[in-house]
Image 1 (cartoon, rainbow, N blue to C red):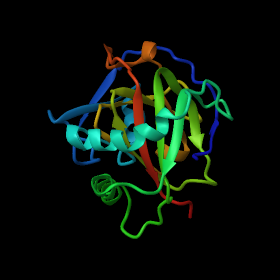
Image 2 (image 1 turned 180 degrees about the vertical axis):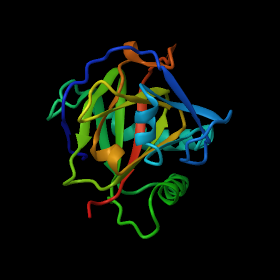
Image 3 (image 1 turned 90 degrees about the vertical axis):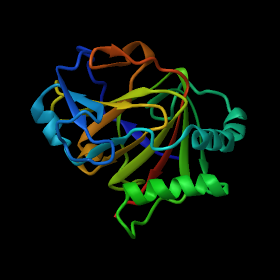
Image 4 (image 1 turned 45 degrees about the horizontal axis):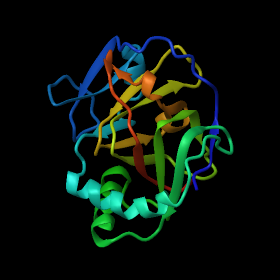
Length: 228
């Protein structure tokens, strides 16, 4: 089970995005272009700071593949109740599990995630973390413990769009928002993992570039590498 700690609450100021950057859906390189708008930030400087360390690949899995993963994880999740207090108060309205064994198609999907997200030969955390957020659930600003996970985290978003917010530890007035659309893959690396808090916004706060992004029940299937 992933162990995480809350670093600090981030004051939510404006939900408007003054800077919207366009990224290629299959590259982490920042560029102008029409392909995919998935990142916005409070300044060009903060966007540049996460360049190459954040990536969102839209439509990484198909509807059929989403359904396959959902059918694998739903029976185990259904046996649990949503929790509204986490051991370190980082998550509200969640249930979670870990899976080591997957069906043929599920394992094939996760293999693609690993190839895309992690350098060849990386030592990965064996169990895959599955986190189920209720519609009213959210993840508070936190940084994952360096004792239990390494430099990279990669997560598939099932069932709902959502907004992930990154805030630098040393400057809570700056922020970066990632649009995690349903069936997308997000990747956080290096400083984006350890020098920024990350959170999943509440439904009422879920805006991207000034546009409402309704939050529904969301399941994330998350792979991590081991600490060095």
